[in-house]
Amino acid sequence: MYQTDKERMTEKITAFSKYGDLGNGGITRLSLSEADLAARADFKQRAEALGMAVVSDDIGNIYATLPGEDAGLKRIVVGSHADSVRSGGNYDGIYGVLSGLEAAETIVTEKIPHRHPLTVMIWTNEEGARFEPAMMSSGIVLGKFEKEKMRAVVETGGAVTFGEALDASGWVGDAKNRLNQDDYCAYFEPHIEQGPVLEEEDLQIGVVGGVVGMVNYDIILEGVSSHAGTTPQSYRKDALRAAAKTILELWDKLGALDSKLVFTTGEILCKPNIHTIVPGYVKFTLDARHQDMGVLAQVVEAIENLPKDVYGCRLSYEEHWGRKTIGFDETLLGYVEGAAKALGYTCKRMYSGSGHDAQYVSEMLPSVMLFIPSKDGLSHTVVEYSSPDQIWEGANVLLNAVLEADKAL
Ligand SMILES: [Zn+2]
Image 1 (tube, helix red, strand yellow):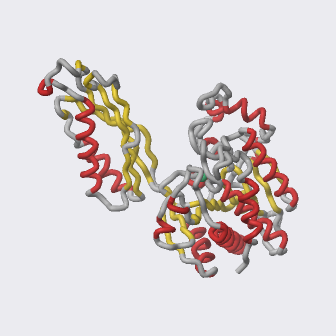
Image 2 (cartoon, helix red, strand yellow):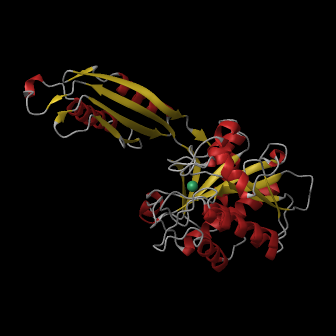
């Protein structure tokens, strides 16, 4: 089994943690910001120093390619993102990019023979923290979003459009460079777990079988706004009271379904939201995720069966968003699992509860993800952390899984 260089891998993470450094251990590296552009420039320089050819496509996705022995073969690609959320950490996204770069560097410095070209790529604007939605550019490449509509998206809290930021970035390349089936044969995305399971179970590697499906509903209670002092309790149609009862009922009902189901009410809109007025209108969200779409169908059924009248308030609901469970490629999963086991690492198959570019790419290319542990399961925060051993072990699994794919595909 081949091994990457632990010190070199750590240096990469440390070096990139300076781009957008908040001085408190975390970063804010919004897509196409100055910090993001600095990270991209460093990536390009490092890739070119390894003899990789660097190009970009029309939405600023970057592709750095190391030639293989057989130029006629399709490329194997490792990808993730370099942007972060506001007050994010040093591992989400960039870990996938830098472990790919470390795998390439190991191949170059150890002169490891490989037939396929190897590409390491950066997806533009994965987080959607500056320009909504998340996974914007993989979504454009896979035909989920229209490019012109996305170019017109205005940054959150500002005035610059995605198109303007892109044009000013210097990274607008040729659309023919986009990830495609003719030039690429397999996609790997290493990532931090962003949850507590690997650490809790004392495992080194998560072999990610897919991304869980989800449903997202708005549930609305309509009562009557009235005076908090003059309306006797028995006359009230209090939408917030009705919402509170409904939320607790949902917790009971959904909690009795499969134990792997996760569900969240994270947003409540209360009108008029004035302390002297009985609330007349409440809308709250329900986000539920599970790998088995059958369980999600039970969630939908529970929502559909909610009483339509709660304490005199009218209940209605709307499906806001949803996605089907995505399964990754079994052959590639086998390479990741095989590499982890051959390296002597403990691992298990698991599903991702959060979205990643790989979920779109999987519709175009055989795709797979692997996870490394996140300390305390925390991500999208400045305390996000994976140890030098953990980031190195993930890079080792990636390198060997890529080389296995190189032999077999
Ligand atoms: Zn990410």
